[in-house]
Structures are given as structure tokens and as C-alpha cells.
Length: 283
Image 1 (tube, one colour):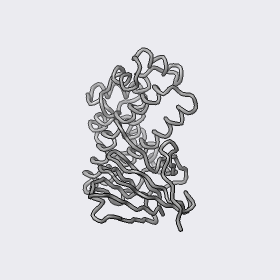
Image 2 (cartoon, one colour; image 1 turned 120 degrees about the vertical axis):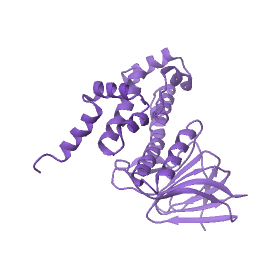
Image 3 (tube, rainbow, N blue to C red; image 1 turned 45 degrees about the horizontal axis):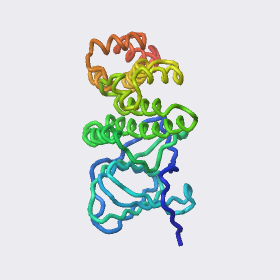
Image 4 (cartoon, rainbow, N blue to C red; image 1 turned 180 degrees about the horizontal axis):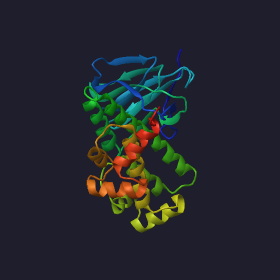
């Protein structure tokens, strides 16, 4: 008989997903659980990403990860799960409830820690927005939908990283600020707004960032924006206007100026340089 334990929320259930490459998105969309009192699912080769809008319970079993023990996890609105291949899942709901889902195939070998189940609070809006964008893009531009889901899963992984930083002695306000920035990188947020969300003054937050990261909040924010801009310029076919909006600098003149200052060339130059490196003349 299978043994079961209730999940202790203070001890994350971690799976390791190879996030160094964009996953293949096999299917995504909205769906409904609970049409039957108990519903069971199993996928042998694909990861399952779910964002729940309802209350209930899911029982998870994986022979390798948990030695066949059944883990009982409560579900609530804002809960998100990323189930690795070969996970048996059994859902129990009192009434039908909606959720978003995505079935993914990861490629690569180097795994990053991602929670199998976690609960989102203020981060829910950003994660839900990425999921909805991916669903809307899936039929017409699947590669862009894949990038949205990739970003979503990376954000979930970053929540583990910031939690580890706190455990290692990092200030929780810095971890909260990094998380807030990651979830709102496509918005024109201010240092004062970041500080409010972190629970400290902007002066104190700058001191903490200097002490832990060697740079003020504004520099860290710009570095994150430029890191994403470089990636989108060199790994996507998005227009420069679209990329500018995606990194929170919708003013094209300002975006060009910031990219030139931090990446050493205008956006068109960054993109052209990458193409010439990958496809040198005469080869």
C-alpha cells in the first residue's frame, strides 16, 4: 500500500529542470478540473506546468524523486506546480475549478532547482500575465509562446535562488527587491517603488544593494534590463520596438541610448554582430 504524507510548505519540493535552453511547448491553454470527484493524470515524457484558480488538493507520486511516497499538497488560487515527467497526479476537488496548463519538453542536462509546488502572492499577476500571453501566442507564433513560458519557469526558479540567498545570510529586503524586479522587468518601475515592496526606505535599500551586490538598485535594474535586451536581440526575431517594451523602456530613443551605453552598440548593431559571429562571411 502506498504511504502518504502531507506536504510541509516550509520544505520546498524541488525538481531539477535544464533551463539553459528554451523548452519546446507541446500544448498550452485554459482547462477545468473537478468534473469528476477524483481525476488522475500521468505523462511519461513531458513536464506539466499548472497555474491554479481554485481550491482543492493534489496528491503527487514519483518513484524516483519521493520513493513512491504520495505527497498531499493543498491547492489554492495562485498555486503553481511544475511536475516532472513520470509524476502521477491525483486531483480531488469539491467543485469544478479552472487553471492554465502547459506541457513542456526540456532539452539539456544541467538542471536548475524549480519548486514542484509553490504559492504566489503579489507575484501572481506577473506570472499569470506571462501564461496568458503564451496561451494567446501558441497557435500563431509558438516560438514566442515558448519564450514566455521559459521566462515564467525561470522566474519560478529564481524564487528558489532568492530563498537560498536569505538562508545563506543575505538580507531579505534584497531578496524581495530582486524578486520584484524579476517579475516586473517589463514595466517602468522606480527605485522608490521597489523599496516600498521590499519594506525598507530607498536609501537603506541602496545601502543593502551596495553591501551585497556592489551596485545601487538602479544599476542592478538596468543590468537586468540590458541582459534581457541582449538575449532578445540575439535569440529572437522580435522587433526592436517590441523588445524595448519587453524590457521596460518603451521610449525607443531612450532604449537606443541605454543599449549603446551598456552593450557598446545600438540595438541593430548588437543584433548584427551576433549574426556575423554565428554566420561568418565565406563559411
